Image (cartoon, rainbow, N blue to C red; front, side, top):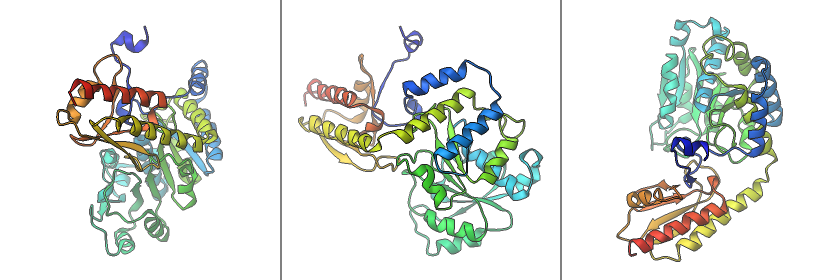
Length: 374
């Protein structure tokens, strides 16, 4: 009996993707071995955080890197660094009025549940543009919003945002002119692997990635890469040092876990990985299109805007909808979660499956056709 079985928690085949709700991604045996090694000794966490950050920065061609306990924590800490830099104070010397006199520019279509960190720091947010409305003068709009109290521009890179915000290039142009740091939330923007350094190359000051999505590190980990002068402020005054970032603890296991995962991610054959994704989509389409119950087709890119194909499945059986299908997939020994689009459509994402698991998923989907009389 495994530990999940002991607790009565069923194991799943995850056909949704790297969603936090289902555990993000799976760590490799090498990462788990390195975490086990890390857990076996005491170390100076300040030294470990700095040494691991330096190593990751070199690996990813960035000036500096800082490991966090998730991407949302990375946004919060990046904001603290920007406020600290703007006011010319170490984090531990920031006062309530420093936060209240700080402004962050962001775009309405980039609002998300994760930007609650702005409220937690009591900064003033200046919202620009409207969702699904392309501004006539985006550069001018950003420049007009910038004041002496602007500490940062926040930009969200994701497949889940509506049109309407200026491009990242225009945002960087305005930021550079007014000497304002740009904080880029790119939590799910891997692959491609080149994003680990490309954002910094085009001028982004701080970029945040999730450690538990495509990097296949610990789910409770995240990564900030970017400018040395900003990240140095975090080394001085964030965890494990007492102060504003103290409560966002990241253990030695997460630090080593994401370091190990990044090394493996950079060494991965991404061309072969892409071919595997295409093979899974091709297999799913071939199997499901053999039945009158479904119509399956390749969809690209995936839900997060990542350059990965997925399978879009239309239910053609009038006796079946996605609510019934979801219940059926969670019944029995093999339990499966898929990404539901609406009552007639769902997706299969190869990012979190093997080709053998894709076959199992399709076999169970074909069985429901028989049981519903389709």
